[in-house]
Length: 423
Image 1 (tube, rainbow, N blue to C red):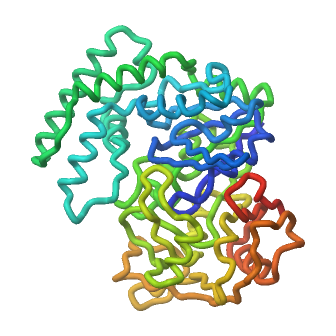
Image 2: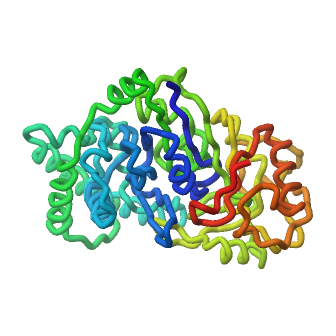
């Protein structure tokens, strides 16, 4: 059986958690393949809002096994809090949640190192979530990291101590004042590690290989978004992992020829958290309205998201890089009430009109060129079928499908799992 992928096509926060939750009934296994607890996948059903950071978004479905893959970095402290929050839902976590031995661990000193590094950058800071994710991936590629499987080995605490001591020396090197009590942080960490060790660790690449042989249906869940990819995103204002389709192969051990459908998720407009270029960002009342109606605050950080019109140049780029086979448009309801809508269809780049994403999209190099369209006034949140869509929404969808050359299969018209319309 092929492995299907589900990816964000913008700067993250597209609504991946909701769609994984909606699609899980069609799959036997949901596997997260990269990123860390900077992810905030929000699911809403039965009047309750759930925010997951590391645990895959299929966890609320009894039929699905959920795997945290080798490409993910795990903070045991945050992971324990997630597990504690799930206790009241009567989920058999021992059998339904499996952890790859090859996933790397975020140590308390990784978080401190993240804060010291970001503080030292001053105005040049990249907008890190300060979760220790960057330093953990640096240790991974530097071949110094601790992995989940190390917790099953004798002497793991000595390995931890050596790495933490190295981190403290690096923190001192940054020369910034950082107040912390490492003993207190370590006590919390060790308690959380005990909880983590109560779950089942697996050789996830072998597990998934056998699952494919048995005909199990697998959905790989990405975190963040394609424009935050360490290679193909708006570097250096990116995350530390490969958020694009290729990351599923390296983050789960799935062969490229086993990839099936690639579901790409995007908002009907655009948002970005933290620093970095954002050509279509709005600083006017339209942007403020999007943020207010869309409740655009980071699920992990609480930071307000920057809002702007949909950028088709960037979206086409993400579709190409990922090989997207079907699109899902989120938050269509947020655009209700705008008399006119704008979509960026090209850039003016160093005096020339271009329709591809160039090396640098900072505002001094790029000016968006917009196509204007009629909006719609109808409230979409109560709709249940495509034939109820207002004319303006249909025209918007038709325009996007023509430009992107990929069908939009799902339109989300609200945060609840029931507010999901299949086309």
